Image (cartoon, rainbow, N blue to C red; front, side):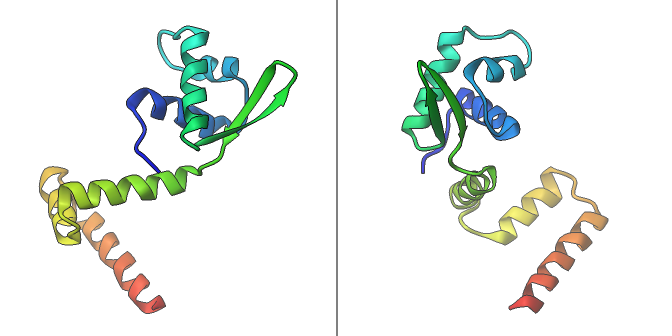
Length: 122
């Protein structure tokens, strides 16, 4: 799996949201100025080639749906960020969130509870 470009990810977010549809359906969901049909169609074809999207053909028309789940991609991207920006250290992730994102005591307590619960399941 590879990381998506900003535009590919924007279209993929729409595909995950609508679950299945045609290029025209995806264009309707784009916020702001709508790109040309051919641009969106090209991006969707790239997503097919990269293995993120599958399709069903009806004559000359294609209905697209996700092949990779949002959860699977989120996990992949987190691992990338985790290793590339935090050197694989959970301590650095939590430190970053606490310092740079003003993580509050309630949120820290919630994170600790999640960690404790996951330890109990092992």
